[in-house]
Image (cartoon, rainbow, N blue to C red; front, side, top):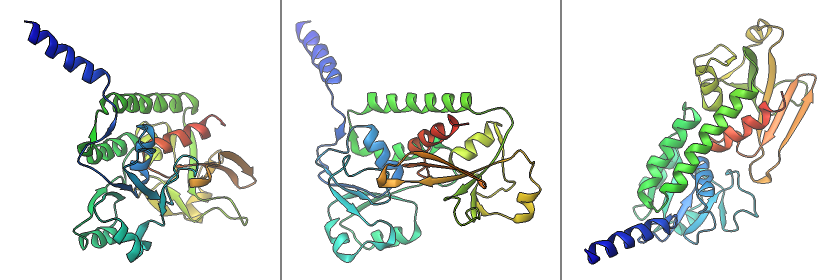
Length: 269
């Protein structure tokens, strides 16, 4: 009986004091994916010594991460790739990167697919890829999922009913809106599914807007440009005769940071 009680106490104590970390056998991790980097930050792992680098496109300031910052994408040099040997590398869905990493057997590359997904689905998909490398993170992951629910609830509270809005990628500069609009992806896709907004009519995730279609939209349609400030960490709202621009780190990164960005925007309505 005493042995049984000691075993129970040991198991409980290990669970209570388990620290979110990478598994012991993992020595090097590089996150070139925006969604995985944001989750690593949320789990408190960005300062972990096993994190060897992130992408320059990730919404992480110099104060939040002092390690190597890679140029990202297909611009990885041969020298950079050599430095990734022996690492687990998370990267966003890319045929080019998939091809590059497939020729380096000493790099364990893990592709993260978030295209055309709502934030919660993007986070779920990212965690599915990352979870096999994590240990003791269940509590923090549960907290992350609760945070997502709260962010979504808060966004819906702030957005007026039957809001008509078009989201452009970029900034209102030069007297003309950015060329591309965001429709069936990320937060916009989720808001459409929730029937909370009416937006640019398209079945595509992103599309170059048509002047004829824009002209025929209801006159009370809001025109909103979305700009990701990335490593600068800038957060602001700008208004011009063309419409509103909101700037936020990770505004175009699928998942958590995009929800935070759109809540920032919704509170300004």
